[in-house]
Image 1: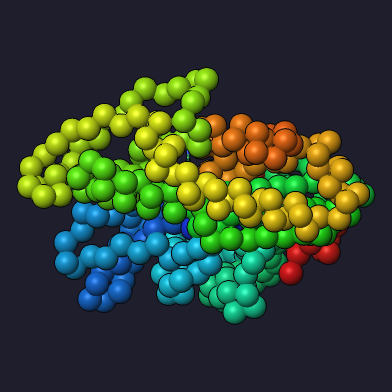
Image 2: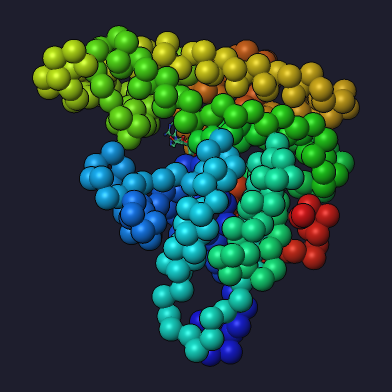
Length: 339
Ligand SMILES: Nc1ncnc2c1ncn2[C@@H]1O[C@H](COP(=O)(O)OP(=O)(O)OP(=O)(O)O)[C@@H](O)[C@H]1O
């Protein structure tokens, strides 16, 4: 960044679980959406990975906050600090002037006007002079590399931390859209509950997430089965340490109900899809994006249930951010997609 480059262009995927910033086509920030604050003064102590490492380990003077819940801003103050803190991470070189920011930020397609306003206000308070917003499934489709302007139906299912977004896209617009507030966080909660109920073990959110990433599964029979994952923690009754090997089969059972809700939402979006577009989707298959797409066996379970092929996007955790980055570079061309 030189002395005279006064506008910095950034694309932000402001997620419930992770926030990603793209600048000059590169991912420059990829951090958990967490901040740590001083409980008395509300001053910022840490952002992103550093704040996440403090989660569950803080003393009474510090609180860690996840500013987004269910895909939308739940804590306005913390969200603004988080966006500011993450933008600061990319402004490493000293400039004479503070650059003004041109931003494209993505939002869940089921956001209310108040929720959209909250994202716009937070972005503007964090330094955004020109702020555009794009719906997440549209950004995911662009990030996957689909031709969103073609007269052809494509269905994208984006399973994030807080929301699952299902959309059918054709001719540059969202034709059918379903956004449910059931996603990765609910799968994590299922594991916390299961570990307590079945193994009498108390586990925190981070341990449950590790279990999900290692042995989380959507099917009880996998071709590429992962080895059992050994979890250490306190017994809920005695508080004594215990060690339990966890298999993917038992986690598949524990996650079954939540996955069924995602299945039902996909089926309901398909039901609402006009027949011509439906035929395109059956032919092209359905694209899975977001971190939830990485759940072992999910693509196969959905394909078996619906008799339609499911494709996992390349690098599904970054598909939305990549698409938001493409929209940023083509703000004029994609003006009809932006708000
Ligand atoms: N290998 C994996 N298996 C299962 N789940 C995973 C895996 N890797 C990441 N996840 C889950 O993906 C979710 C995060 O995905 P992503 O970053 O796409 O969400 P987000 O954009 O932050 O959320 P949202 O779009 O809802 O605001 C988390 O719940 C995380 O636990």
